[in-house]
Image (cartoon, rainbow over all chains, first blue to last red; front, side):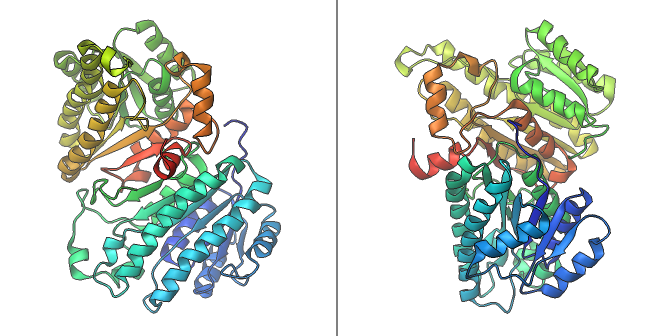
Length: 243
Length: 253
């Protein structure tokens, strides 16, 4: 569209979770080059890479630091390994052992990583994409990091909007996906009884595959959408989040 | 791409513009598509011919969405022919722009009649059919441009559509029916051709992607929402506007 180039290579950050697994599988199935990164759960990232090794080109790049320091040169190295880089997917799943400080630094790291990636992506394509996946903080309302989740969610929504304004001209779109209740062990282990008891109007929780399908849509088929936070919660909140 | 094989869809105002693009895309993904039109039979038939030339299937149905009897007749005819309905896209709309003091009562009423009452009529008939099989999707095409000068009628109707979508989503969710709202910014259609060159260029300044959307881009969003890939989306509004809404939210206009 408008001479837009096809998305071919994608970097998944925070890939070592059941969401990461589903997202990697979805893009791999479509024959894309998929780079996996997870410095906290490198073993899972490596296992995903092993599982999908036959399907398309999968690289485990967890060894390259993307948290602080010279992010741009590491990203450039990843892009070189992949042949190019068209998209970044930032996945987040709360780690029960992570303290508030970690959650706050996650947000800043996400911002810096996104800015650095946008400039790398712009070298390869006029149709780049950054997707920031996070959760509706309500799912963690009764945890001791509820405050940080709320702050992080707001920050990510705000970053997404600003980044989309900054990078639209470069041909890089930035969108977010806020997931409500998710049926994945990482989440159900944390969510409280009353959160688990909530029933969305559609009567079902999202599964990792639903997150993957939505991210695939955003990356591959969402042409004119940028600066948006999509809310996937089975109709629970009815658009009252104001993003 | 999300598949819509064997789905039965109805697109109101499907003879041209965004509605036509949506009808064609749903058909490309495997849906059987009913193209609704009010008065442009020739264009509706041309849309159907294009759809069939691409290998798709469908039919055209005349009905004025403001008339409940005609709407009912149309849905009955579709049901009679296909025995089900999976997807309704409420797209029909009219524009009667005028500055507020110059806006006649009929300019106001015409827009509300089509953009809001039409959605009520069609959704009601659709839910009646969809509830029987406990599945279905309604996608309401509203507008991301609800504060334009000379459009209090359009703005009121489209804002009304947001509330309608949210409330209906809650009510029909337990029946297995999803309701989504889509808010397009500026798109290249016959309707937008009427705008002046200056206002088109001014709009680029407020749009991070620095271009207008293409009808097929909106169609891809509607097709995704209508598919099982989006089975956890309901009651939400998604703007597709090249980032214009982001600029509006951060800087105002």
